[in-house]
Image (cartoon, rainbow, N blue to C red; front, side):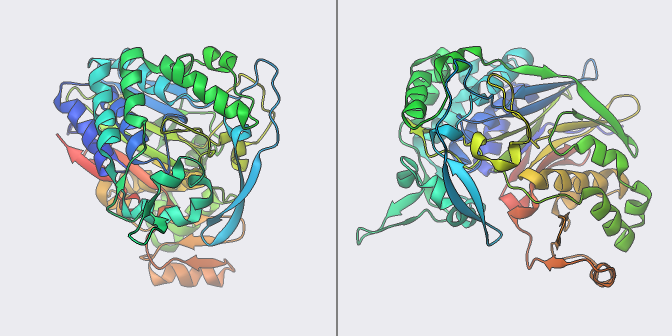
Length: 467
């Protein structure tokens, strides 16, 4: 059986390079994923940050076991504090204004530093300071603003340009006016390098019960939020039991409590119809995937080391709350309407669509590892990539780059590249089609690694590297 090479994939070139550096230094896949999670908090801050949270799935080559970690945000208010109303804003989503809420009341308990540290402590072998070093350097020197981020920024500017963000995401021209950051310019957050230095020295508790955590709590509470030091002290990374479902020749291992029920979707997809291709494939995907359209900003990374261990992680900041402390942006998860599906009990975990996963064969040997970013587009993006590799026999790069569709209750969105017969048949069946003129980040950002190596989604300007 062909072994998957040691490799990484991520949504930004500098993030991927941080992961490769960890592998080249003798680190495990979990070390590389931790390094990329932290690096993304300096390079992909439209999507993620130290003030956010996420999930990771780890494959242990020696035991062929899978572990799922939950380091997503928790609901604040364990001390009895009730938040004031959040501030409503509107951002553009595919040209349509969508309401969101920001401010202190939108900030949940962060978990990202704890998640990276848990991966390093439980499954890594590099010193913590070495794992965090690339992120600190990127924060100190700045990172190249990608084309995908520059395209997205105008749509989310009302959330990103509040407070400290006004200086990070805009530049002053010679005439004294300010404009939004453009592709290729340097993204830099003042004070963030010093935060990474403090976390390197003091551990993830610096952003919970340490000085930075206290200052974040003060800023959130001053702005009407419920976050308290009691919330910060109570936070713990959780281990979740993986759910396993067969998908063609492979078995998916994924956390089973995601909001969009990825495992159930994979189980009900008509794989025979997908294998036939063309119109049958499109119909099967639409039937399995049709759901309301929601938005959440996320990023995903994957790493495989020379011993065959793998780690996939997805993490997010939401849009960001507009509450900043020393270059750290507080998350806006309590203002993300698509996540508010049920009672929010102080101290409990919020739920999410994020599903980093592993796929193994009948002998529990690794076939594929990866995840996706993009809120409600995580499920269709991942499902179509998995179908491409496992059912249609495509290589991982081809499967990630292939045209995608998303099916909402009202519209079927299609990227260019589907056969003409697909468009004609769906229109004849009464489907309302939106035909996009080019592949776009809207359709999700996938980072995966399989037998053919790694692949990072061109829609997000990602990079895949093999050691």
